[in-house]
Length: 139
Image (cartoon, rainbow, N blue to C red):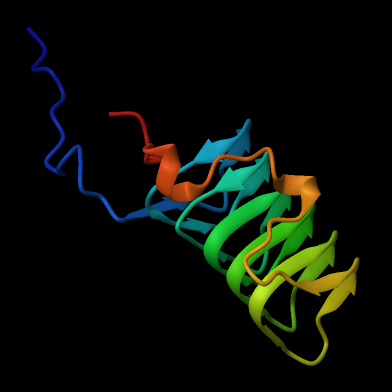
């Protein structure tokens, strides 16, 4: 008889989730954790902090406390702290409180200091602290 699979990691309290380069997610992601994306996401993302890998692509709006963009984003971004690396390509508006852009990054959209305001393009998305969900692999 096969032994049932049990996870050695705690079900709650996880503060970091990762989507590998071979991963495609179709649908919205809501996470109270920090999220590292190296694969592709076709949907909106709401999380605490987002780190996007150089070869990854996100098609959808992003809302987080902080974002670090290195790949392609097709959609609006709203975060208190935004870092756009030189390998990044953004096709959408960016709302921020603090902004860093490396030389060589490409942006097709508007930059707007948010001053605590959420741009209309992503106002419908739940806030990461209200989501109460953690994106994680199936157990």
